[in-house]
Image 1 (tube, rainbow, N blue to C red):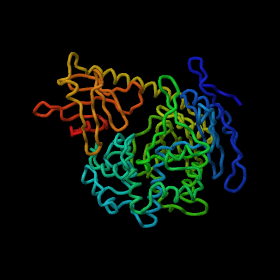
Image 2: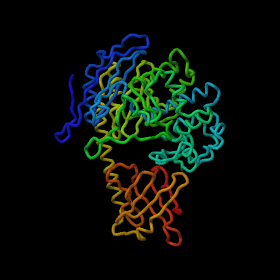
Image 3: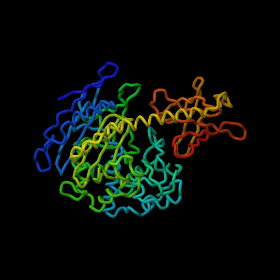
Image 4: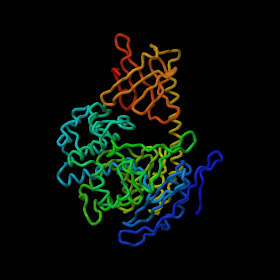
Length: 514
């Protein structure tokens, strides 16, 4: 079998070769054909896109007509030890966790313990958002369709130390950027709230509910709900990223607090069972785990998620309950993506064609490979001409980089030359607090300032007047933009505005005693 080697400046970084697919059994006990004629050349295609986008490891699974069609690992799950990816390899699935949370909601609706369309405050009387109308009218359906009116506000949870309950209690201090139910805005905290709701209704943790109601009946024996569990496995992938033209191993990102929105880790073998469960309309092992009616709602459009696609092969974008719903080359497509530090995944299926695809990778950041591979697999299994998704993606990314550079130049041109801070640097130092986002500390650092938010530390370099720019030469901290210090009538620095959520005004922190 042909082998590819990633090379940088003449140095071989790693070898990409597909791990041999095992003789896997279908549910009728027969061995499935692993490489039908439609996938001839697929190995070379997968390895070529992995090479272009620096992806060290990838797992690919395909299920067709209720039988396993393909399950393979490519590249390495551990670059340093040269351990290969296999169909058993555990990787983070990120936001593909969302439909698991929705599944439990649906089960509770089936049991009459919840109702999709009654206010959340029916079960959580202390539920409160910034907007009082949304507070009063928000339903479980609204929680999982990205129409709360809130933008992402991810800086509230990403890399933070708040518990799930504390995140829930701080929702009331988050400014919305749209009216309730008027606009699709991707929102992780509402899915966290859906998981918290499930916990309060059942008296069980979200993690236990996922294991008991989904993992166990589906036979997803390797899957877990916390990244702390994956390294205990005999076959798991390390996360990687690309920095300074070098592949680097990243630390695992613990997101247990926001778990219902994205903390599940799984394998290709397990995820294909989950996809089959969805295509079988909520049935697994001869049992109807979720009613067909609720499964139908989950896979049906609930919210317009965007305008027509720029690609004629992709239909109008809509969102169901925790899943995207559109078409691919005229075939209904249900899908979702997921990403967290060092991992990107793509889950999808064509219900009418009884064809499902799962792609896992252990490379984060700017990684379009899972979607490229999934679409290529669909082209092959549908017997259609292969769309040049590689060329199109390459062009889109080049255009995106050009736009970013233009924006950078425009922002730099806003600088007012010859200005200086109105105070000595020590006057800006201190602790500042926001009722939702918590506390930041600022202190002098040589000729600059330094801002600390939980474990994140960034330099503040003077931009103009009392405005400083967050800089992180190592590109390891997800904080960027300009902070503005404000003064009271006495001329004392008493507030600082930080752009933690770009779709609303700067988050205003007020000075507090240390």
